[in-house]
Length: 221
Ligand SMILES: [Zn+2]
Image 1 (tube, rainbow, N blue to C red):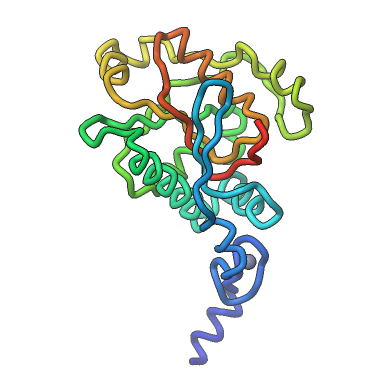
Image 2: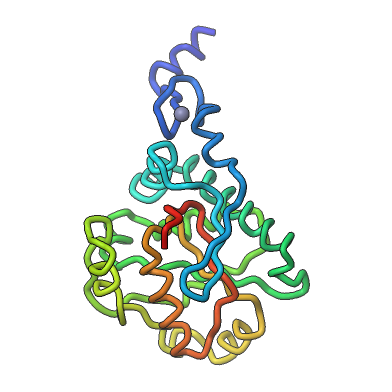
């Protein structure tokens, strides 16, 4: 008992979202991640997301990304899994096809600063059978989107992504990807600018995503 108290004191457990004590994620915060999977569209692309972006959900998104917080990454991964389950229920995914998850790319500087590529860290925790397909890269300087207005976000990102040159990605891999189901994946979608740019860049490489999947979204694209 004494040892347990000491461990509690040294490594206090608290809700990853609201910091309530003695629980990794409190019931109130957990509920925000268990709402019905939502469906929308960003231009022509259908999108599924599992939680609304709110003061309850945003700390988890931030902790997973900026602090490499494992419990938060698992919550986001579960949200993505729930989105995929909904896609299966809607017959958007054929059980025999391979499922390629293409993450929205981050800048090399962000990955270096965080010490990890945050979407990889999330996708690695998913239980669904997916193939992590890091085919997109950022080709020029972009600024952090969070402080930008809608039109500025579009301008900031337009033409900024590309499919990695074939030296990194073999023709065989590309052919396989074209035969499978390709899903663009993000942790948070706000204006949809990143998704639009990803669709544009994939289209240049003659790849058509089936839909987009996000753990969390603001829902006004
Ligand atoms: Zn909480």
